[in-house]
Image (cartoon, rainbow, N blue to C red; front, side, top):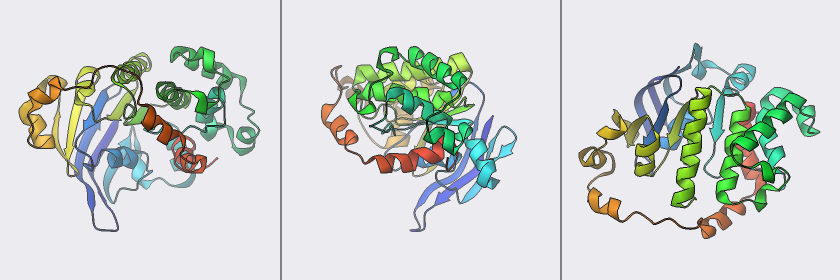
Length: 289
């Protein structure tokens, strides 16, 4: 379904973020990307939907060569790639329902979205998705009144309202406590199974990757250094990906379950809406509405 061949990304500064990425993802598979900070995980995900432009290589989704698309063709291709963001990319002043319906921006056109006149079938599907992600009671709440886990569920529902073939998920548990992180990963996994969706999930938590992914790809310095099943991810391979560490001791020191990270959430909520929208619009509407 998705095939990356020889994909590389070099920034104008000369930094090589990705090099010679070879990757194939079949329909319905959940793939976890792991690796140290700066390994290229987010860059890889964003090269797929062209939020970051690769400097070399081929990216194909079904029979489309994504790297050659521009304008309307790229906007249409982006409809089939749902993006779930680390920082949620919600518009705080809008309701949960309005944020979910923004997943249809690439379909309804500028004026209908401006006046929030979405087709009834889209509204009905948004209701169904909010029920599925466990938020039927929050439809009219403003996004800034939600907890981190709830905000992430809204982002998941919005991505699914695009009717995508592929989910691109960027650190979905970064600001969540361990219990909520497992709930979010379980939800993504279940939704992918229900809808036969493929997913690439950039995640720092190795234990969650082992528990919920079908396949794990390890990146280091922009290169794939491991590609295999979760049960193959032993201490030797973890050292190859991350460097030397007492992995058995690290596992014993995992953070206990508790409340969500309030301080981190406070920082997230203070992000400017204009910054969120600048990132959100290309991903869910193909570069404009």
